[in-house]
Image 1 (cartoon, rainbow, N blue to C red):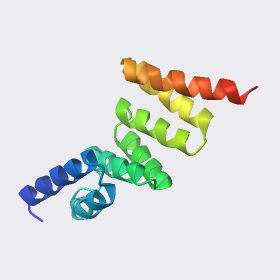
Image 2 (cartoon, rainbow, N blue to C red):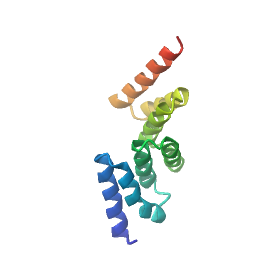
Image 3 (cartoon, rainbow, N blue to C red):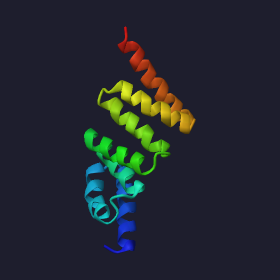
Length: 125
C-alpha cells in the first residue's frame, strides 16, 4: 500500500467511526495496521473502532498500546477509562480517568471522572 493509500484508508476509517460504522472501519483499517502498527494514531483509531463495536478487551489492548507508545496521550487514557468502566472495572477506570483529567482538565474529562466517582460511591453502599 502506498503512503497515499494508507492515509486515504486511515481517513476513510475515521469517517466510518464518526458514522458509527465500526466494523466497516475495522476492515478499512486492516491494511493500515500492516503498514503502521506502531503509530499511536492508528492504534487509537483501532481502539475506538473496537470500543464502538463492543469489543472491549481488544479496545483496551489498543488503548494500552497507545499509552505505551505515548504516555502523555490524555485522550487514550480517557477512552481507556471509559472502556474499563464498560467492563465494570471501576477502580481501574477511575485511575485512568483521574490521570486523564489531571493531564487535560477539560470539562468533559472532569465529568467522566465525576461520573465514575458517583458509580463507585453508590457501589460502596
